[in-house]
Length: 138
Image 1: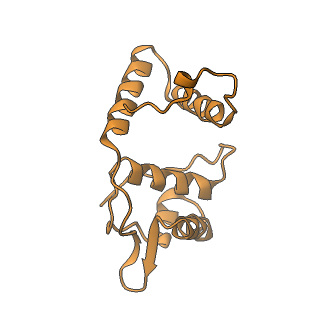
Image 2: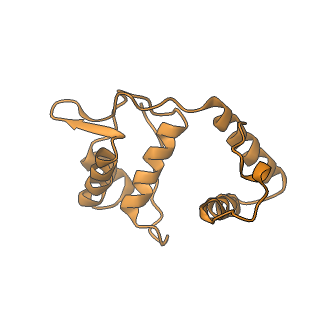
């Protein structure tokens, strides 16, 4: 399966981490499923214009996280048992992006909102009412 991966060399996020995060996102979104083959290290490095060692590090970290496995003859593939994406979360993310774009936000502004929400989610919410802290199914 072909998926789009790109690297922004001006970003503060290291290139290997950008590759790793994008593969994780493709799996989470269902664009990559168990058994799907990733590009070879050499091919992806050439396509992205980065060192093969950079892609190798991303793949190694994905393998350590259990998301992919590397086999001699088949290359690097998405690991069996990788959970299918939650359709409710996919639908919610599509609605969020549509709403943000309708509001005129650029992609980087949308990502900033998500990053802010992720940081907020890490903060303790001891003073929040119980119903605010309860998980919400979308």
